[in-house]
Amino acid sequence: MTTPSRAPTTTHRTRVVVVGGGPAGLMASHLLHRAGVDTVVLDHRTVHEIETTHRAGILETDSVRLLTDTGVYGQGPARVLTEGDRHGGIFLRFDGESHHLDFERLVGNSVWLYPQTEVFTDLHRARTRDGGDLHHGVSDVAVHDVTTSPRVTFTDAEGRPHEVLAEVVVGADGSRSACRDLVAGHRRWFREYPFAWFGILCEAPRSSPELVYTRSETGFALISQRTESVQRMYFQCDPAENPDDWSDARIWDELQGRLAGRDGFELIEGPVVSRSVLPFRSFVQTPMRHGRLVLAGDAAHTVPPTGAKGLNLALADVKVLAEVLADALAKDDLDLLDAYTGRALARVWKAQHFSYWMTTMLHRSPGDEGFDDLRQLGELHSLVSSEAGSTYLAEGYTGWPAR
Ligand code: PHB
Image (cartoon, rainbow, N blue to C red; front, side, top):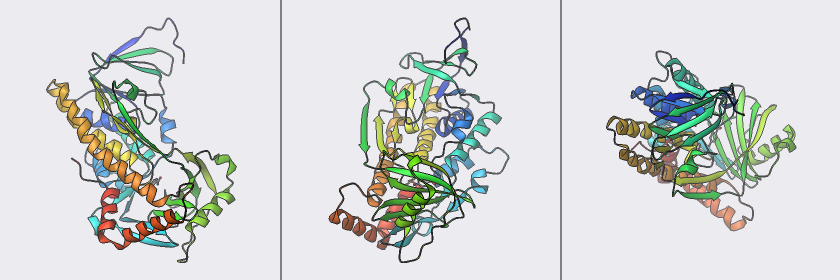
């Protein structure tokens, strides 16, 4: 959007500017508000855009606790508990059979199926209720002077220019983060994969009470759920796949082929109401702090969706960040922020490994041959037949204790 030349710039002052008003940015703003720290939140996306972008749906126990125990729901019912579905385990399916991993028995823990869009809605309501200074749908967001006195400029939806002066900037601006480029001397680690996920939403009843992670001769598939009548499913595809080339019939053929097995598992079909190809990569940038800028969530790291760690990791970052940042501001000692990178990264690399491991255990890569297939099946059989192996997966999936 172009700036009308005569419109005067409105100057705002706050303690922390949060760039990115998705779940990570809003949770940061919420937790800082509770610690008595004022924030301004900026996002180029509109609330509607964020609410209608489908993302993963599994919350670890600690993520649920962060929603229920920090006043997100005020006096009202905790929607994550009333609308979400508690899942006590998952199914691993391979060689035509499903194997149940009972997380409650293995680690005394469970996860919740509650889509990221709902988490966003809950946090947006909470910040609005608490008078949060939120600006969605803005443009030209630019961050300046992060090592001295941070200033963030933007243009509002009416084309008027603004600047926000703050002590600290939180970069929670997602996987295409602009903030991350401002970290001088950063290091980046990548892992690309030779496949992506084809994701659909369909109108059908549930085929399974819990998620089914499937390894088949023709590649990975995941059966997830949304409601009684809408389901979410994925299958491994070529990253260059065009969703428009896939008719409903072709999608169901592919999924049925991958789910088929001698146990007679029945995959219930229905009209496909949304289809898209999801990016797939592993990425970490360090450090997560530079001067008065700190990064959180996808801005600093992305994981492949196998294992649904992305949002959980972002919320775990933000929990540590809000604690460290409120302390640093209260003591007027920003060097205390250095603790953040170390604490956050310990979990990030565990999650990187976990997502990579689940991915490579369940997907086929071009060029895989007999040895790779049989080794993969050997790994899956040893996992489900070993208490130690199953427990390892259950610990990672439900989430490691906070540090
Ligand atoms: C989802 O329901 O969208 C979902 C669940 C588990 C995953 C990824 C996505 O690992």
